[in-house]
Image (cartoon, rainbow, N blue to C red):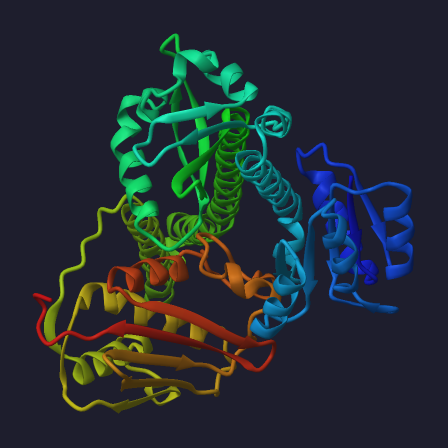
Length: 505
């Protein structure tokens, strides 16, 4: 049973939910004060206590003295702030570990508990083994053979001095068969050199224990192998070095880890499948709306020309032909954008930087976006130490045209769009700010997803492709793009790409 002593109900709920969602079969009980914790402990000794450092009726570390005296259960201290002084205080008082409270730590609590129980088992087994080596032969076997883990005692030459009962069960040897044999006989061949090196390094260090343990494959008498974790400690017996190796069969743990990894893989695949379905749904919705509108205009203008051509004035004919041309151009642009997004998703778009006059390039982009009209609506400001920079003009044009066009499209008729270009520390920074409708806060994180459009612009034509292309093309430059927006006040896009002295870098 695990006893968790915590007075914050919100934290209790998070920890309880973490254990309920885990595959762990650990039983968990809760106490909210030192008094109730002591009552729990007196009624039923826990296997592990996880205690908050500060409680309504005292410090959680007050329980440490009560635990250390009898050494019956380990404690983990929880603290709200990471503080080396607090950590040292807790560990000196006898805590097995300490953790800093956070939502992620609460989620990981089942794993933390299992790890603590394993480590406590190692400590208890190691202490039993060390006591066994120091005590008489009769007492030695009483403690030694009672250990739940396989234990082997080695001399300085890595030869087997003695083994316990669990070791004999794990490896299939009896004690006489393995006596004086080299330890490498018990290690699968691919792991022997690593084990030998680890032991030599351990013996040459000032440490008395090797933690965390070494994971390798053990080899049974019949030649079969199994995964195990070996922890080492050393002691002196009559002036001679003795290595105490604790072998823990981790087959079940490996199976659980494999199952967890498979579950994560399946979850990722399901999430990816869900995203693909959402992208498909958004794409079909976009195609249904954005393609149908120009096709309807083309059909209407075409019917007018077919049925009433003779009665139309020259100006009316030109207007209808112009509508058809404009909508065909719009359809062509949408198809081009879709194909471009598809190519980038298949890594078929290459980054080809060349040196260009960036100031002149940006001015030309502004003129193109405004199509020679209302140029004053976009205010271009540059602050660069030089004019020539290595960029991919094809990709950069798509980036800037998309963001600047959006700035005009989603802003009031007489508002301005600010386009700033400046040099940072080893980077080019481009900031485009409009005074438009803005983006709802909860949608900013997904605004660069393909076919994603904010809910407040559904009545304005658009495909939701442009910003996805922007993100991908900025990535090809090795840069980043971010968005900051306030509803009904405006939106600002910040692009940052690294600068190079020449395009070969």
